[in-house]
Length: 269
Image 1 (spheres, rainbow, N blue to C red):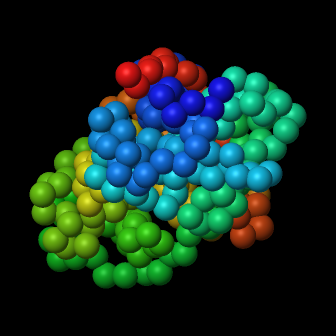
Image 2 (tube, one colour):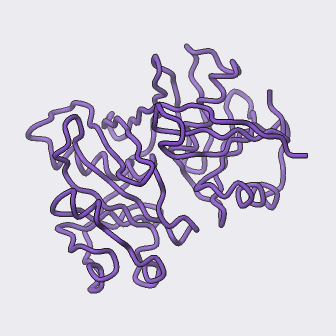
């Protein structure tokens, strides 16, 4: 089942094909070079491709965009776990432990959902670049620096999120190469909406971004605390493909739940 020549493509954070965020998954039977993984990710031309290899009682996981390696990717983690459960590499009642660049990621399956335990990202208030509105399309009411160069900007309403039209060529120069924009939602069954832009990693807009919720979950848990207590929050990423996540703070960790389905597999010849 582990085969260096097989690539799976999985749509993550959705129950419909061609929605959510597509990720490539390669289950490696033996280590390969960084160059090979980067070339595969570039050839797949998806926001991320994950590479998984057995490591004692864990599985090493690496993530590549078409341009570079990144430390953490939510939808590619979800896709990798989905393939491992679907192929029977891991039983439905068993936990998967991925050894990632940010530490162990504990994954389990609950009915049709895959539940991921991720680190919490820090949030430090910052001043918005003077050209933020000109470049992104709205004036943030709050803005924060987060981990891995992510910036989290909060809009007045969800319409500002859906209508945002970033000038990707200018974002990197003003420190917005990794940008999360979010607002409280008025949509039934949805607590907040989000879009994510990562031109610095070669991904102008990411369809659905699990790792961004390492910052979004603590922010919205606090922002909505008077109404929600400790209940699970529902996130809608309002990209063209769209995607849904269920998130919750568990101590100092972030729990992310989502669905996934396999679209196809292909062989490297």
